[in-house]
Image (cartoon, rainbow, N blue to C red):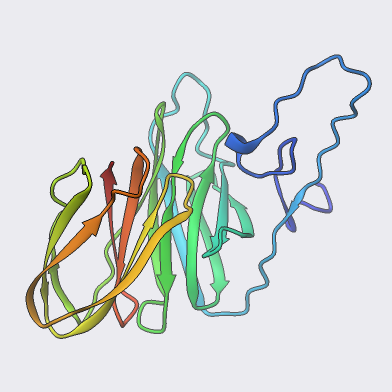
Length: 233
């Protein structure tokens, strides 16, 4: 096993850990050594939080075994913190994590990934994710966390969205809500904070500044609960 196995990420030519960002090489060019600098994992955790999960889906065309799939933990700025690999039973985990906001990303060469963004707090220190893998890609799902502020959050409507959509909510009590929108690479493309009053309210979602594509919308409450929905622009 390499001495860098636990401290660096599997990397592609172009010094990146995302296959979509890799530089294509031309074989047989003796003038280019095609050196690859491994991307370091920058995490140093001493917390009490954890994220665990499973991969589900059939082994399609013999191209994927749910064991040894690369799972990357990113911080809120998309910097890599830690890498782990799924076990024979398709399970994986990140342990001893500090409070904060993280993205879980399944890196499977040739397959697009829809990651999940998770916020761990004293009220919600743990999270479970499910990554569904198919020939079309890997989709990461996160169960809604309980909140003392939220009674119900409805679905985004309409979906797909043209320039604007709505989410109907029922609040148990007033709370600040932070709304994040992430693209398919897990990059934050829009954020804002509102105050939702007790009772029924409507959250307006503006997407006129977004390119066409698939996005994850995350709503976070004052107690760190997280509600995630997917939408298409």
